[in-house]
Image (cartoon, rainbow, N blue to C red; front, top):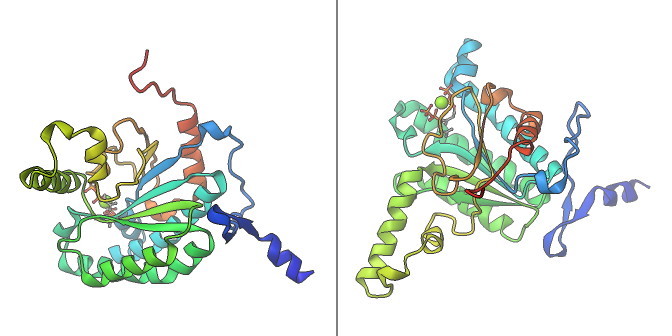
Length: 268
Ligand code: IPE
Ligand code: IPE
Ligand code: MG
């Protein structure tokens, strides 16, 4: 009986692999019943407000980052429950190097720890982890941890989790332009062959799909250099919740808002 119950917790994911089903929310909350066509395929989240959350409690900023870990992995569970196929999480931007050396150091170590702590759980759930970002300046320890997580989860296909670390939208475009210019200089590519599709292929993650729902937390209403190329037709949703207070319910609320939008893509 116990054995049967254990089997029932597994679902068949992509490529016939067995994966654990997402954990239901402790409150018993269930995702909104929406038609499949109304569920965003790719959700991008700007995980913002950790510092303010900590300040409100008289805690150091780093305590806010620590509290944000549970929020991210609850959102992952909620995304799996509702059927999102790609989730991009903005964890460290190319502008975040401007912060104090202590905070930068903390964030580098923290990202290593989070990846190490969570990779098996993500693997069990059938989540493919992908690093999206620029190698320059990023700590070797972080790159190595990201590569290990990618290797472990590369066969998974239930959902892709893009960990955007040392990511900047402009740097991504600059790096793509530089790659393409090099191909042209070496006569491996004709300028007339440069298309939107080709540029997409030179982004940090060529397989990334366009963003459907762009979710910014903490009450700020800006995109802060996150996925500009991929978000040109994304629906923007701004939630006035500090990241550590975010739960899967916040994601589901944003998806309900998204589902009511009328996406036209320039059509009449
Ligand atoms: C987001 O929280 C985490 C990172 C940018 C790394 P913040 O640290 O930006 O928190 P606030 O915006 O100062 O409250
Ligand atoms: C965006 O948050 C970057 C991440 C969440 C990693 P910031 O706190 O850096 O953004 P701004 O400075 O408020 O635009
Ligand atoms: Mg911030």
